[in-house]
Each structure stands twice: as structure tokens, then as C-alpha cells.
Amino acid sequence: MSSRTIQVSPFDLVVFGGTGDLAARKLLPALYQRDRAGQMPEEARIIGVSRRPLPREEYLSFVREAINRHVPPTERNPESVEHFCRHIFFCAVDATGDTGWAELATLLSSGEEIVRAFYFAVSPDLFAAISQRIRQFGLVTPESRVVLEKPLGKDGESAEAVNAAVAAVFQESQVFRIDHYLGKETVQNLMALRFANRLFEPLWNSTHIDHIQITVAEELGVGERAGYYDTSGALRDMVQNHMLQLLCLTAMEPPDAFSADSVRDEKLKILKALKRIDERNSETCTVRGQYRNGSVGGQPTSSYLADIGESESDTETFVAIRAEIANWRWAGVPFYLRTGKRLAARRSEIVITFRPISHSIFDHTAGRISQNRLVIRLQPDEGMNLEVMIKDPGPGGMRLRRIPLDMSFAETFGVANPDAYERLLMDVIRGNQTLFMRHDEVSAAWRWIDPILTAWRSGNRRVHLYSAGTWGPSAAVALIERDGRTWLEDAD
Image 1: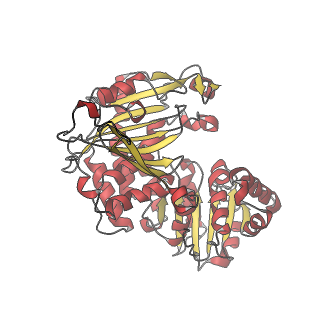
Image 2: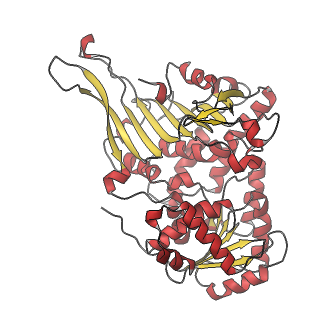
Image 3: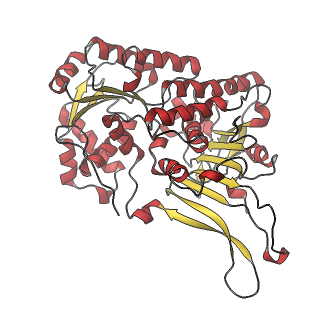
């Protein structure tokens, strides 16, 4: 079974930061895949923008290298690469000055009537300057959109400043705040699972669900992001956006329609209903960790301090949080959030653990009856499994065991899932904002995160160290075990 590809309308996509890491790793490979699938029209143009002047042929070499490094060999060939390169152009522009803007305006003048998307794959410090010059040089058209990469600020105040600068040039309907986790197939299937099936929605509440775990774990360290990461940390980098968005999609009420504002209205309600964590309860509800040297995948690894070249740093590379939602559906159900670098495995998943059965009809010889779990895997192998109790095959009486009813999307549909950026970039061109964050969502997320940051600063508590290749500091285990529960990898 294969999905049907529908070609999008002609467009110009201007990528500020067109020679950067994000463009090379994600944007150019994703656009290449969409072109290879026949989704990009021949008239489409991708215009890479950076400060350093480059001849077009030199930029094309950069594009080819990005595809060779980040697209599997089975999914590229010289003909498809060269076909994609026909869409590629380059313009040298100074984001904070006037150099190059007239040339960019001339390049865009031939496509004023088509979709024009500006992708800000640069530091948020440049968002205001770029937006102002886009307006100054008359580049905004009725069909313009702007894509904002995270992080949107370091706290609520700075995020408001960024949003205000962009809002002075673009209407909210033109702004696409991207979170690539929302483009993952499994995340969207979470909504299909809940709202297209009678089976789960009646059970999706505190009466039947014991607790929910959301884990985003990485084996990698900070790598080339050391400079950014040491001023950010895991709470800002992962929890404020990715993990809160996953929590919202898991917990939200059914929207009245699968439309941008209906879905985002319900997510906003969840963000507003999150119980506050501050100086009073941060010590019992949050854990900060930082990796030291250890071993990941059998290979020795260095510490965070060695990776950033510093003798000391209080920046967290791991966060665990016990969150609660104060509404009728979720009253009393804890949501355990966990994310970190240099952990035991690369894993992103949502685990819904149901309450134990009320009464067992089986005697002790049948064995322990474990709680049912629904595990939704976001990476590396997108899919889901429902863990249920069955009779162990064979004679000898009733012996129970828990098994997973497993579904891998790649195996079920016979195709690999497209990268999240492929879907999200095409949604930008279509003008579909369903999988993008609205201004008030960003503000609400920061209103929940800011008191945690303040509590950490005022509490003067240093981070807990953990060995690379483990599942984080022991304090994270204590966080969940105080409630009589365990993280998934520690459960039976």
C-alpha cells in the first residue's frame, strides 16, 4: 500500500541560513525527497540565502553534498539529484544590513503571484532584523508565509519580543512556528487512534488510565551545538516545545474538527490547565541532570564539561518532571516527562499505562496480572504496540503472560515514513497550520516553564550527575518510584 502524492502549487522558498547545519541535515534532503516523489512543481524555486557570497555552482555543490550525506543511497540517483538542483538558486544577503536585499527582491520579482515562503533557519536574534528588511524591501505578498525555527526566546519575555517583531510584518495566519515532532507520522496517528476509533476514547481518562510517561532520549551528546546548548539546557531546548506539544496531543479534548484553530484551541486549554511548578514544589516535581563520562553503545564517551570545553557548568542535559493537569478528564493522573542526552538508547515514546483490573478470577498459579500498556513509538521505529494479557500456549493449566500486539508503520504499509520536515514544509506551502504552534500556545508554554526556571535559580541546587549510557540520575528513578511506579525500561 502506498500513499497518494498530490502536487503542491508553485512556490518560492527562501531559506535564510541556507548554508547552515539545519539546511544541510533536514531542509534540503526533505525538499529533495518531495521533488523525487513528484510533489514539487517544475516552477518551484528554493533560494538559499547566507551572508557569504557564493557562485551558484558552489552552492549546488553544497546541496549535492547534503543529499549524499543525509539521504540513503537507495533513495538517490544522479538523475533525481540533478532534477532537484534545477530548483536551486542562491543569493548573498546581510541579515542585519542592506547588502544583497535589492538582489533578492529582483530574484523574487518574477514570482509575486505565487506562494512565497521565508524560512528562518537562523538564530532567533536575527528574526527581527530579517523581518524588518523583508518589509523594508517590499517582499511581503498576500501569499507570503514565514517559518520560525525554535527556540523562540529563552523565556516568556524574550519569546514575546520575537513574536512581536515578526507580527509587525506578518499576520498570524502567515506565521508557521515549526516543531518537527508534530510532523511525525506517529504523532498524527495518536489523534487518529483517539478520535477515529470507538475503542480507546471511552477509556482515555482518569477512571481507566493510571499514568502516562513521555520520553525523548538521545544517545548523542551536545556535539556542535555546545555553544547554544550551554545557554539553553534541556528544559528550554526540549520540554518547552517538543514535550509539551506531545503532552497536549495526548491529553487534549476532542476538537470540533480537524482544523488548525480547532486543534490548537484544545492544546491551549491543556497548557493553561497544567498545575504550576515553582519554588514550593520544584524539588519534588523536577530533576535536573548532567552527563559525565561513560559508555554509549560500547564506546567510551566524554563528559558534558569536556564536550563544551569548560571546567564547570550548571546547565542540565537531562530533565524529569512530574506534571499534572487540573481538569475533569485527568484529575489525579500524573504525567511523567523525561528527556536527556547521552542516555542508554535513542528512544522517543508515549506510554499510556492503564489501571489494574478490579478483581482477578485466577488463582496464584496463573501468575501476576500486569497492567495493560499502550506504547506509541515516535523513533527510531515509528509504530505502536498494545500490551495485553493472554494465556501462555500449551497444556498445564492457566498461565498468563503479557505480550505486545505490535504494529510497525514501515512493515504495515510497506514504505518508510517520510521525514517530519517533508510533511511540514509541504504544509507551509499549502497554508495548513494544523501542525504548527500558535502565538498563544507559545506564550502559555513559557508561562508554565518560567516558574520552573526561576525555582531552579533561586533554589541554588546543582544538577545531579549521571554516567553516559544510563537512563539518567538516580533522582529521576526516585521521582517516579515515590508514587509506586517505574519507568518503562525498569518495569516488568
